[in-house]
Image (tube, rainbow, N blue to C red):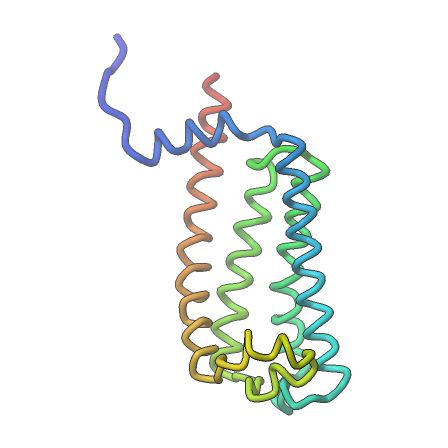
Length: 172
């Protein structure tokens, strides 16, 4: 006897994601573009740090550096994993860990706040300064709070999606 109870939104969503688990070449290329963008950002931030512009304050110690650069690195690590494996669900546990790591990092960095955003544009050419000059410490803190909430929710979403797709794969 089979049950014909209606499927919930998340079950339907997981079924759709399961069908798209194997990545197309264009999706893998998109992961490469993401890696490139993260590397540009990391280069920008390392330049700030090594040039002692004042963007990173004296509160930016070893733990803060590990959390800050480590959370950025997870984007690269998961993208490389997706490119190599070619499947999204296989990498989701690592993505969930990266989201949890980002949640912890953002919480800590918001509490310590080892940044001075008045120096964010110091290393940019004059024509690019207008793009980021509006970002103050307070605005950065708002973005961090949004990031904290987003990474918290994302952690559980990724875990639930992974488990749901894994179950679907077992039953098929």
